View: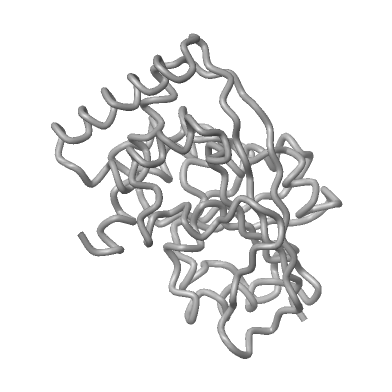
Length: 250
């Protein structure tokens, strides 16, 4: 399956995506946006996990741009404070210099960086921040690493493969991009989830969504078995991480 086809797989699981995927660790947003009195573009916003986290952070002006109609419908229904627009990272429906920050959560790997980077620079005000985030179950815990193996999360083109789990990871922007040097950090927390939801969360990733129904059911069965064998409790206290990278527009 091609990368664009994989990118379009999430709409079929939009409700589960919104219910099961982790929101960013709050400390990650505080690191990315020290001040809340800003206009923020949530680019590739999905179902609005970051848009709602920004609202909880006190950011009053959030613009959420999402290309997938099904994901956008959930976003609009559950993020009433955000301005929700159809669009892509390569064609952002906003005026020049109209936002103070652009955040892309679990989305940068789906963008065409050669086209998206100048578009992001166009809508950012001078000195504005570009923040890239990935939130995921933390594979430094051994049973989570076993789940990631079932999910095939170590595939070279998986959506989490570029996130890193240590501070110091880097993102290379295209040559000539009008941004200063980047910095990165990783923030962690633990969240209680039902054991079955931990297993079902694997089904919201493209490596599983693009399998046949029978294969998806087998992934869920194997994941549920791992949780029962390795953790043995219900609910489960799941370790999550949010890896973030930030650079400022010249």
